[in-house]
Amino acid sequence: MTPSADTTWRSMTPDDLAGVMTLTARVHPDYMEDLVVFEERLKLAPDGCFSLVRGKEVLGYLISHPWQGLVSPPLNTLLHTLPHKADSWYIHDLALSPTVRGQGFARQALLLAEQAARRQNLHTLVLTSTCHAIGFWQKAGFTDAPTNKAEQAVLASYDAQARLLYRAIS
Image 1 (cartoon, rainbow, N blue to C red):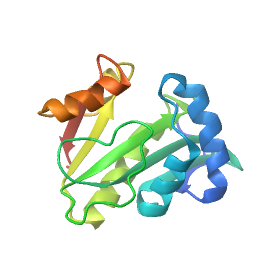
Image 2 (image 1 turned 90 degrees about the vertical axis):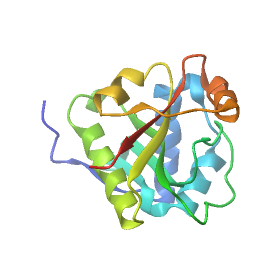
Image 3 (image 1 turned 60 degrees about the vertical axis):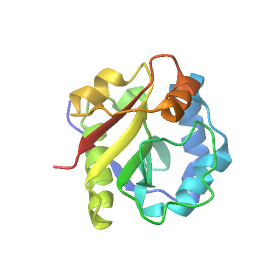
């Protein structure tokens, strides 16, 4: 399938957050986060937050931001601030409605994350993958990042198979 011309990625706005919450409840029911987490990420890093929309309907979203080190933010946790000396771009969440999967929108979202990282002179994407998404991320070129005990505790809060992954930006 090819992407529909009327379905496009654009910068996320606060008005999109109701649709984001509806979508996350549908596609990530085991990894729910509070609305305030999404509001904070949008406020802290608007240049890393995007909505996939058709009309006013949110069919996907990307939440990403600058990050430092290899201990990822725990699930459903506020950051309060971004690191002053980021060394990577963290993909907090990428979600697509089942109705638009397989149409290249995930690849487009990764390009948006790469562009945001490049604007900040960052050369690595980092993310926490749940057990359900590891294959997707590996196909996108991500590999296991080294982890310490602190990161292993964060990963365990997601699920027993969650992994910290990273990839250089091409």
